[in-house]
Amino acid sequence: MITLTAEQHVLPGKEAQVDALMARLMADVSRHEPGCTRFDYVVDNADRSRRLVIETYRDEVAFAQHCGSSYLAEFIPQLVACLVEPPKVVRFSDAFPSAAAATFFHTGIVVPDLDQAVGYYADTYGIAFTEPGVFAIPRLEDPDPHPFELTAVLSRTEPPYLELIQASGDGIISADKCGQILYHAYWEPDMASRWEWLKTEGPGVEAAFRMDEHSAPFSMITAPDPFGNRIEYVGVEAADPLTEWARTGVLPSGVGA
Image 1: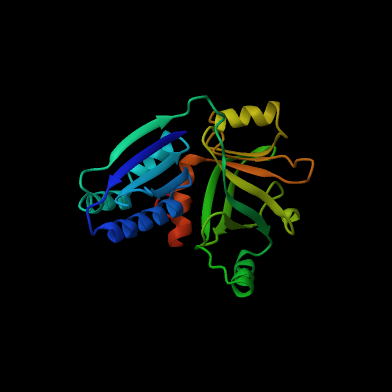
Image 2: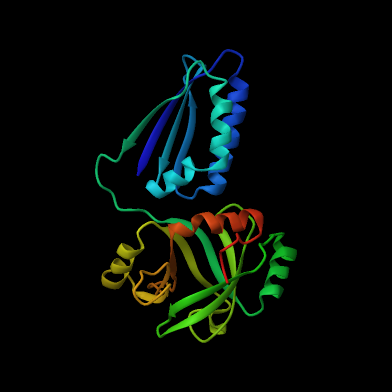
């Protein structure tokens, strides 16, 4: 984990402007950065011109996503213009090693007719969905390896999202998986280690999605646990395009088939 503190000394009369800037930044971070696990903004009780931001990121990838965001680049000069001096930023690391934590981001449901399911959830629950995404999977092992084309939509909501998946084939996405939650999906920062854990200590793997037979899975679905539930782990590298897909409704260029 990476934790930062940023101390702000606000110019007189600029408090409301800084609060508005921070509120917008926090909303952007919440919407676009699943790797940010904490973002707090607090005020000194004795001197309300003193503010403190506390941020925690899952790993360097998540922190780099934050630093490279367009909204942060827009935010910084606006904030600095409202401060006595630039924020005093201090970076911290975990004092003790901790296991990498996966972050819950969606629930996947297999449906027999994707268009019909989208219409039902929209009409019944008022949920808007993305355009369908078609993903050409070079190698799906469920259990026998084969290429696979997956078609799905994500809810255009805040995470965790609802994913509707068109039933296809006779494996993990087959029609006999309809009528149930297929999995709860988590971002995984270390897919190779997660794979080893699932195979040696966890419930096992029912399906693995790879680019080729030699690469680590970029997505994998566990075998059902004792309660009948499956977990999907997805490499955190996919967080940006999939989050953008949910936000805009349009699959980013270069993603999918």
